[in-house]
Length: 340
Image (cartoon, rainbow, N blue to C red):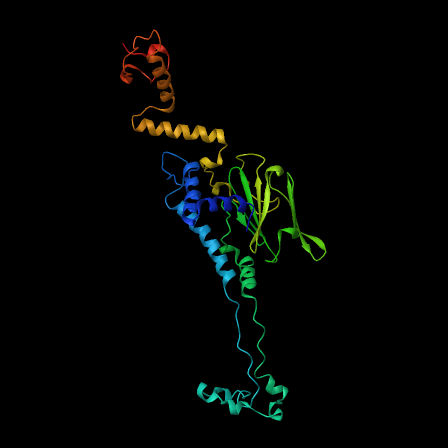
């Protein structure tokens, strides 16, 4: 799991003092600065369909709940192997007796060394139990090497293979690469991101082994790209596209391509550059003001200018209370817009 934001987040958590105010800060940020809580409607392309934002939150919560469950599950234990006794070294015919008959007293369990010596054939009847596996390691490994058709890794507008999953937005591509060993550390990895290719090397004993080296479907900006290790899960590589708005049909050259018609080309406000976000938000605000019969942002600016000129020296309205009905704001902000 990525810990690069732990420092700032710990500072926020300490400032909040408790968990609930901390969560309010996080979700409040999404409310104020993104379209996360904005419902998607027929007359606008920003926001989420009903229930999708909540589904995304629950998906992330479930992911870490699952990891926590695996990490804190107790290792499986097996009872010690009982001493070899004639009562326990029964043949297949004798093993059909009831549980009550199989129970022997402590006195019966005390046998001589001669009685404890059994033939190889008898020893094959009750083989010694194998050591208990490490539940955590096995569970994580099964999750990584499981059925990719039901894998919960995000591959929105992308695809999955046996080795990786990828997804994309109009600006970025995200690659998740499966780990051959869940105990791998970030210091064991070397990832080289270039404009048209990516190379992933992994430490194996004293050498670095190349596990992935491929040419990308299109160009990226290496200086704006980064990678992180989600411990016990995958290597996550975030790539910024070289061509904003260009949709990839494959992660790497030569891979099976996705149907371009199936790609969701919807762009959310948060995906636009800051200047474009401001323009979109202004248009949305003006649209809402018009529906309510209220002045738009431009009309509000014009009104502010006219309010200052209302009582200016030489104004025919000097000394009078500002009256918006005498001003026509629908055309321009020029002086001739004053009514008569």
